[in-house]
Every structure is written in C-alpha cells, then in structure tokens.
Length: 176
Ligand SMILES: [Zn+2]
Ligand SMILES: [Zn+2]
Image (cartoon, rainbow, N blue to C red):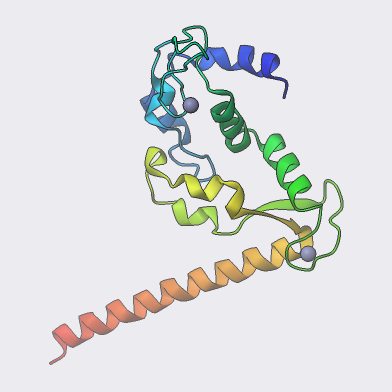
C-alpha cells in the first residue's frame, strides 16, 4: 500500500487504547499483538519501537510517528495482502511441502508454528515471532489441509493423553 494512502487511514488509530483493542481482539488468536509504544500519543516517537525519530542533523522529527523500517515491519505483520505478497516473492510461489508451483489465489499463507498455540495467551502478551517471516510459508490448498488435520490430530491425542494421566493420578489417590 502506498505510504500516503496508508498513513491517512492509519492516523485514525491515534488515541485508541489497549483496553479497547484487547476487548476487540482478545478472543481471536489470529490477531497479532501490538507493542506498548503503539498507544503513545507523543509526536516524534516511533509507535513501533518506541525510540525517538531523529533527523540527519540529529534533531527530533516531531512530524513523524514511525521509522520507515518500523513502518515496513508493521505493515508486514498487520496487512495480510502485504504479507502474502512478500512471502510469495520470497519463496518464488512454490509450496513448501510438495515443491509444486502454487496457483495464485489457491494457496494458504501458513504459520509453521501454528497460531492456535497462542490461543490461551492474552492478546498483548502474544509472541510476535509467530507473525514474522521466519514462521511463514506458502502451502498449496491440498498440503495445507493435510498439515492442519495432522496438527489437530496431534493436539487431540495430547489432550487425551493428559486426561488419561489425570485419571490415573485420581485413581492412585483414591483406590488404595
Ligand atoms: Zn521505530
Ligand atoms: Zn503442496
């Protein structure tokens, strides 16, 4: 998205509070967190890394609220079309599992460590690394389906395993 278009759209988020966002996103584990500095209203202070924005002559630039690099990272994480475009180019449009060329529009941006692992973490404490490029890959629809189903099976197995464990402990406690 061109910077100008994005920045005018984004100005509206100035003044939004963490509590409001927590309420909105708390239950959706697919939404990435935001750093504390995002909520500061100080001009000249980067909303992503929290450092001051310094010009070449070493004075503070009070007209900006993002470092260009930080803005790029933010865009990457929060704007799904940007993320998809970036990973598509990086991986040459190939599925990471079957190595076949993926069809545009028929592929999934897959999180290698699945986002569901962040499900019980409060929104603002979620781990950023889950949304970073290193954790992302292209999967064709078929391979994505297989991976998701395998992960769900593993989770269910783990849950059942835990249950059996607990039952055994309870039994040991009462039957003796
Ligand atoms: Zn910054
Ligand atoms: Zn594939």
